[in-house]
Amino acid sequence: MSIVQRRPRGETRAKLLDAALDAFARHGFAGASIRAITREVGVRESAFYAHFPSKRAVYDELFAEAGPAVVTRLVAELPDEGAAEQVLPALAQRILAAWATRRARAFASVAVRESFGGNAESRTALLNGIDGALRALAGRFAHFERLGTADPHVLAYEFIAPIVMARFLFFTIDASEAEMRRGEVLVAAHAASFAALLGATRDRRRPSPSSR
Image 1 (cartoon, rainbow, N blue to C red):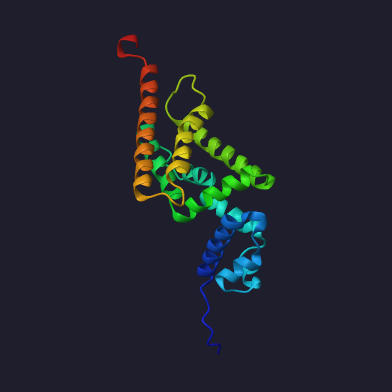
Image 2 (cartoon, rainbow, N blue to C red):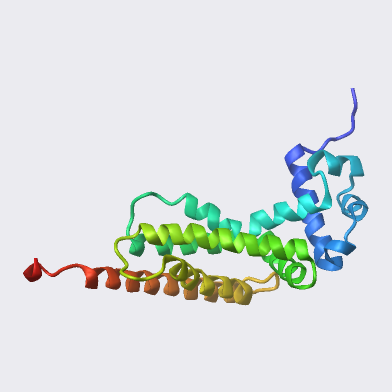
């Protein structure tokens, strides 16, 4: 029987993701090599291919974990019922929590550099991810009680844009605890005020008892 200590499969996968993220941050996607990633983890290249079919697959998994798909996934998990005043603050908090992890904070700068630095595949993935997140949010806004003539896609953009801004301002890899706390406070206030505005719009459109 072999006495070699084998890493659990999940542990090796997580270490490969971390090493790849570090390589992407230092060298860019094009400059990072599978050989360097596996050397950092201390495994053979065959171990890499046991988990991922390609370097792009690693990037895609990091992107799915920390990119716009977070919003799409969390919106899909929302309960069918619930007013904006309850749903939106909770949703904003969950989105920010997902983007506040160390890996997500580290990947944010990588995604921006790759998406706007000439990597067409990464840019397409980002734009498609944003479109998917906005569609998911728009579906939720359309589900809320009558909002008059408000376009749910515009509401989706107006809701998520400040949260994304807070992410890149206050949740970078070098952000301090105080900075992240400031971001949390600002996002919470934004979500609460946005939900209140939606509620006010809904209430204004309800017929008064005297007009019934």
